[in-house]
Length: 293
Ligand code: NDP
Image 1: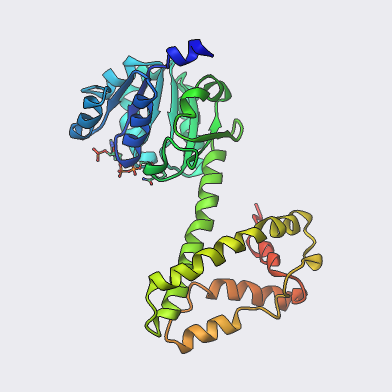
Image 2: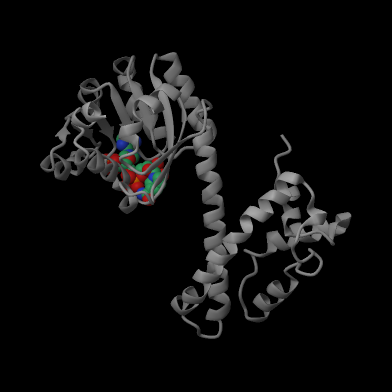
């Protein structure tokens, strides 16, 4: 709508670390009147030179606009910054994209609810250089009206998705995806140590591992279908007893490489084989991991 484009929503960004600067910069570039604040004031200067308004205090920054973005370090720093200005936040919308656990996001949503603040939690699936491009995905949960009303502004950062009114859900997805990323990276480090034991540079290994791991992500949908059906016997994969990681662990030890990245997976497979599931496929280890709450 032409009216929306000519009237970008005025906004305040609290926290100008690597990520906060990228978020605020994208809003300034998008034409939003943007007030910024950072604990160490020097970090606001480049943005001020770029068209942002640097506020001297959190109080002034919050009072300036009806929409407040927080991109601080962690849950504790969000309370440290916002508790002293909670009465000024009443009636405003708060979008907190600081990484927290799901329960910390829920605690902030309860806190906001008690003080008349509309709270939307966000999880950023991107590094700062990706902000403002479609490669950045940002996950939200909490107050639906805040997401809907400010969708155009949120879309300036990347692809926005909404995961419902439970404020913890965006964080749960965020951290669940990071679990996959970090264990994949750890697996890569392990492989690099294996070939490194024979003098192969990690960069040479990365050139081989990158297309292989990318191709392997094609298996995720099939594994997911098996998990959702809870029918591991029908899984179109090598059986656990055939590929129980013994060869990987043995080769690592023989090369003088620690097997501690592989060992927990190896042990889960062994337990499933001992429980009589040796003819089923790798997705079976989901049963070792699933929540028993
Ligand atoms: P930085 O370490 O670069 O910045 C941290 C920011 O928090 C700074 O503005 C810092 O202020 C502020 N801060 C820390 N403690 C306090 C406090 N007690 N009171 C007031 N301000 C405080 O981190 P990033 O910008 O990289 O990350 C910010 C958030 O974004 C984190 O939650 C992070 O997990 C998340 N994120 C970051 C990604 C990334 O790739 N960088 C990716 C996805 C999410 P000061 O400058 O004064 O120290």
